[in-house]
Image (cartoon, rainbow, N blue to C red):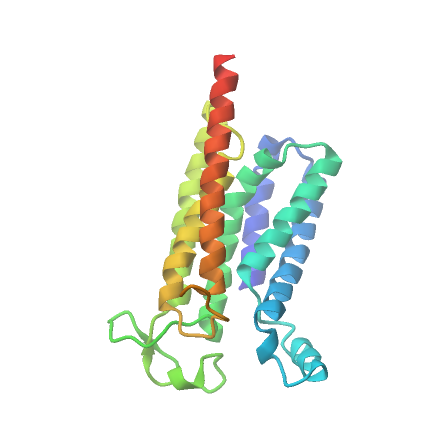
Length: 251
């Protein structure tokens, strides 16, 4: 499902390559590099977040990392590493990072939809027990669900996030098309909107998660803490972009 999400996101970006003024070959190389660094960053952050639970000693932890290499990722780690890769590539190509980031934002939300559907099919990233009609029950011991949650209704948080990401994709796709046509909104504003919207979505969904959330600080999971930081940062970025755009217009 992650591969399907990457494929559809790539197709989406390639369809917009003309607007980005980038040859399709170069854009394909950039997407590939961002995807590889994203998966690597997601795995790295997973290891850092759950290091204490990976094994009793260093050798055991390394063995666990190798065995679980195909799964076990932290989205924010992948997002930050992929964004850094795109930034470095864009600087070397002497292109505008914020302009490209605006186009990558809807594609990222679209790909994330299928990634979360994959989580649902596997049973990972699941929710806590619930009596709601929305609850789903995992019964197979092969599912990556906490054994304590097998056989009882739990929140399908993967589907909540997939639906939220799809709505974010629709909104950002409309936003980026309007910005491109009107030319009034500053470059980077769509990217800032994506960071804010996803951070809020993730912060809320974390309350319903039932899997291991890492070490809590001030009552917040690591993902919630990072979501709060990114949400505030996105607001600061948006205000700075709008302020600079206003100055340029007055000038």
